[in-house]
Image 1 (tube, rainbow, N blue to C red):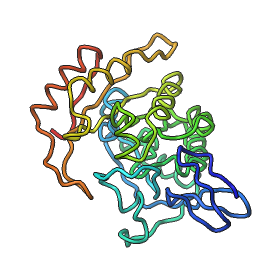
Image 2: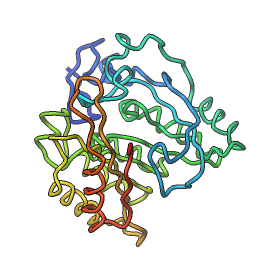
Image 3: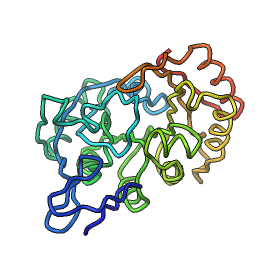
Length: 281
């Protein structure tokens, strides 16, 4: 039975069976992306919305998403396209080739667009399209951005990273229990992905601070110390951290994160990092 090599779930799939991510399927005895070129969302966004505050600030970027995700965050704000696609998302998708996407990006160059950001769902569940489209974007002299949970295998990371200029990667917490028991993920896999990405890409990290899960000063201190230890080998500025405020979403209805706590955790993180930003405040 073929096994998917994209992430920690390692889904073993029979012919025609779809993986946990809802984006990959077994066809002809191999696991492939069923969402290749399937676009559910596209918009021209400020680069700061990714969020990327230190990569071409003040510019815009064509942001594009498909469907599928390999995590199961109970507070997911894009769950309709992440893993309830077809059940709660009535709008379907638009088919688009990598070349078509790159041409759209080029059309908006004179509106401040610098390229394409792969975002909204988890883009790397369809990494083949990301790679193909990124190459087309680069051929037109524009930039590529990836917004990802980073929970993918080294094999996939090695194919994706050389084609991306900047990333915002979620480091959702700094305990294995939170990743495994709440999110259905693998913290070490994310950390490995971040460590690989900083060597060639501009990287910023986002942590959504969720009350009762990852909101202690000690956890943010340890998370920040690890980020500060990252070495890009190029002598460039350290990775920035975005601490974002949680709001009730999807299956999690606990109260929103206190604004004062976000600012206190920012101060904790700034003892280790040069660049710490707050979000949703």
